Image (cartoon, rainbow, N blue to C red; front, side, top):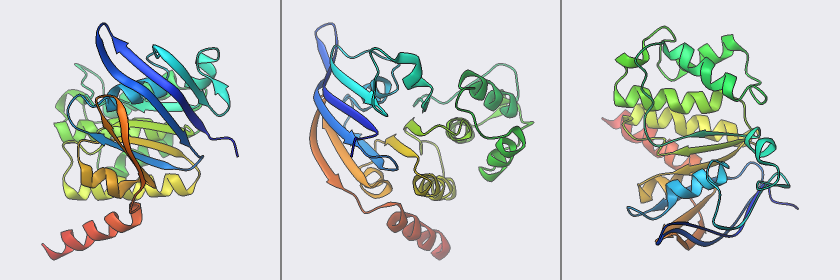
Length: 234
């Protein structure tokens, strides 16, 4: 079976600094991958390259059988990316921010606007709330929802749990589980080894741009249930 996303000997350098070094990676449709590593491991660069927002120095990336170097926009239309920096805006509401992201990904945005508002409320966000008034955790939730609301087949989210309390983490872990069950392919980069080992079907650990571990993880069910138990015991 052809992988939904494939990286073949992908490297990325910034001047004399190597951010990715010969990365090989295959992901099946509906797979959830957790990416972890220390500071400067290359996880953010990996997601940017997978999102076709950053061209690799060498190597090949394919999404759904399409070579990203020759089918750039077709590849981008199949995915949604949420960066590690929380979104901020001087004006506009949370609902308007989601609408803007969906418009930028209009070719894949299959979620009707009323449902997009429902997604925000599921995350504990009021669509009418000004973006400028959001806390770090609320802004992170908005970024996660913006990616989900596109209805893309591939979600790439950098540090999806930063600033979230345990209830917020549990909400999105369950959400990612539902998306994976619906054959959405998900790649999540996190600074927490525990999160990376527990949230996906696989875990990849990077060190100085190289894949040093690629293993099956405990799965979303295991950690999500454990978190619910821990929260309930408090």
